[in-house]
Every structure is written in C-alpha cells, then in structure tokens.
Length: 565
Image (cartoon, rainbow, N blue to C red; front, top):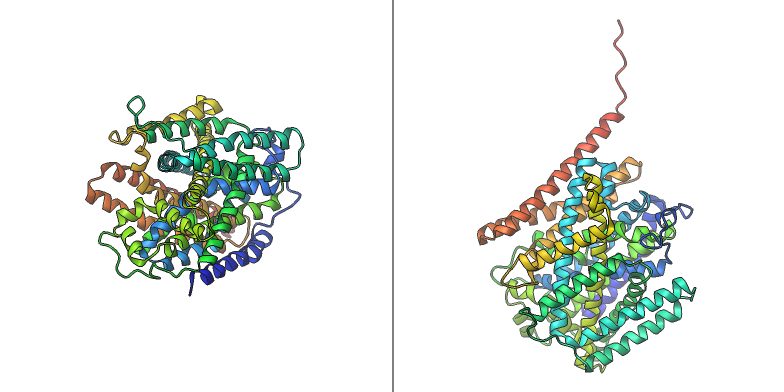
C-alpha cells in the first residue's frame, strides 16, 4: 500500500474515532452536562481561570501538547519499521490518548479545576497525592530543561527561525488585547496574525539572526537555554488571555496549515515507502521493539504530560463541560495527525533506502537525529510544491520551535501550580506564593540545565532525557489509574479506561526495568538513581490505588447480622 493511501486511511480512522467513540464517551461514560458550572466560571480571576471559546481553548491545548516529542518519538521508532509505529499511533490515538486527555480534562472540571495530582488525594489518599506530585515535578523538570535545549538547538541550527518566533509574540499580545479588552471578534485578528507569521517567515529566511560563537565564555546554545527559561518563567505569570491563548491559537492555525501543506506535498509527490514495513535487520545495540516501542513513540500515541495540561491549564479555561470532548479528544487527534506526518516524512521522505539506512545506521544516530529526519523528509514533500529548500526548512523549523516554546511556558505554569500544591500539601508557606513558586521552578530548571552536565553547559536536561519516555508514560498510567477508580466509584463503566491502564502500566514498567538494567551495565549512576526513584514512586502509587479500592470494597460489604442467642 502506498504512503498516500495509507495516510488517507488513517485520517479516516481518526475521524471515525472522534465522530463515534468520543461521542460514546461523552454521552455514556463521562455524561457531560452543558449546565454544569465549570471552574472557569466558578473561580474566574482573569489570570488562570478564564472562560474561553472552545476553538481558542483547543488552540491553546493542542499547541501546548504538540511539542517536538510527537515528531521525535515516531521518527526514532522508525528504526523498527514504519508498520509498528503506524499501528500504535493509530490505535493509541483513538483508544488511549483520546480517552486519557478527554478523561483527565473532565475529571479536573468535576473537581474544581484541580490537577490530576491533587485529585489523587480524594480518590486514593493524602500520601498518594504527595507521591504523585513528586512524580509530576520530576516530569515537568525534564520537559522544561529538555525543551529549552530543543529550541536552543533549532535556533542555532536554523537562525532563520529566530526572527519569526520573536516577532510573533507582540502580534499575539495585540490580538489578546483586541479580543479581551476591546471586544473585537476573533476571526479577522487571527487571520491577520497568521498572515503576518508567514510574512515573518519569509523575512526570517533572508535575515538569519545567529548569536556570536562565544559570549562571556558560553556557547550560543547555552545562552538560548537561559533566554528561553527566562521567557517561560515570565510568560507563565502573564494572564492566559494576554499571550498564551492568542499565540497558541495562531500556532494551531499554523500547524494545521503546515500539516495540510505536508500532506499535500505527500499527495503530489506520491512517493513509495523507502523504509521497510517491519525492519528485520535492525542495527546492533537497538533495544527490543517490545515494550520499548510504546515509550519511544510516547507523545505520538499517549502522553502523561497531556493529562497535566488537561487538568492544569485547560480545565481552568473550559467554558462549558460539553466543550471537553472537542478540546480533549480532538486535541489528541491533532497530536496523532502530527505523529502520522512524522511517520510519513521519515518513511517516505528520504530519496532512497540507502539514504534512510544511513540515517538509521545505529540506535544512537536515530535517537540524535529524530528532528533532522522529520525536517529532511517534510522539506522534500514541500519542495514538490515549488517551495524553496530555505523557505521550507525555515517553515518546518519555526513550526517545531513555536510548539516547543508553547509547551515550555505551559509546562512552567504547570510547574508553578505543582509547587504551590506541594506547598499546600506539606505546609511550605513560601511555595504558596505564585511569584516564589515561579522563581523556584525557574531555578530548578537552570540548575538541571547547567549542573547536570558541566562539560556541556545548558544541555544538562539531555542527561535525563533517556528517562523522559518511561516517566511520561508511567505518569499517563497513573492518570488512567485515578480516572478508572473515579469512574468505578461513580458507578460508571470503567472498562474503557481499565484496559489502557493495564497496557500502559505493564509496558512502561517493564521498559523502565530494562532501561535501568542498561544504565547499570553502562555505569550511568545518575540515571540508575533517578530511574529507580521514579519507578519506586510509581509502584508505590499503584499499590496505594489497589489498597484504596480494597478499602472501598470492604466498606461496601454490609455488616453481618448479630448472632442469635
């Protein structure tokens, strides 16, 4: 089957999943109520709790979750062949990610906008809540430090993307001011903003802005990491309507237009697959496909980070509970479409099988070149439409940078929320202050970026990157655990979350054990320690959940009648 036919078939399956399965979930499982008062209205403050048009909120939600990970993961997984990656992305999006993202959003709305970590308190217990918050903090720390490095690398490799990205910010702020303070209708400002973004891309392609090779003893990449972390901290304290929502809305338009252009280029090029359906000749040192496929693709199918966004920022902006289906489930579908584009770009975008084999000559080469493989393949598709290589690579790189940056400042905002919740949990008064928790989040990210790897300042987050996939998926498993117990307690049919829960927890736990064994063999003490801590926290949490279910079942057993004398 050709890439064109395969792509059309998967897109149809995505549509059917949203049309029918998400409708079933909304009506029969979550039972959405259009009259339910959402946290956005109940706690409206103009900063974090802001009732938002569902299309704008979908733009924020989708842009926040659609970082570089759904591109990098499938591109790396291509080393096992395009077939396994495509099957998992398709099934994972429809039956796992859609339910997970939709379900965590609904659960948060029904619990006054609390994050999934805090909901753990009422579902399992106080101790479990503390454990989950620690797991989430580890995950967000990795996301912030790693995405700052990802953006820094793209700015360094593609300096043409620098100007378009920074010029987008004042345009987004202007749109936010016009819509929320002047009452301007959203349509025309967003269209003008999107047109300006493409104008900026054309300008940036001719006006690259590289940083000097060395400033005060630091590389350009290290400076970009600092700049992006400062930006993320500042952006996380701004009202969501001022920058986050309008910029994400523009970005969502850009990504969808970008996906249309990539798919159109694919349909015009009509290439054949150069990658094998199933690679029977993987390079030496490549880990086993099962269960590592799941944690390698990660965000391309299901992601714990999505649950943090759903319950951390999106739930505080949901205007009506019925909007959760569109924002949560369709947000996951958008992520699946991005992962599908990554698969096609890396499976059919190379000129020859030899070129593909050279890029995937080793596991290390595949892991380091995931983004480059996507840019190369997507650029090839764009060239068939008459788009010059410089414009094409600038467009693809700014697309990745924009979404990585959106993920960064959303994650910084989430980390502030988590630190505040940890402050509440353990009565650490300073952390309850939003400014203090923001500074702590910023400093912890800087510490990881610059102290974890002194030989490569700024890139320290990459030291923990091998743990990201497993930690992210284990977090998704824990979110599904909370959702499943919540549905069970409410008397709803929980089988639809229980099956994904079992698959995700089993696959990721085994993957983490395999990874820790590899780290021990390689003598990587840091990864062994951190990985073991995260694994222990997750197992502990699962045991706490099982104990909570057992206690609940025992409490439901009526007492035995007294013995007759």
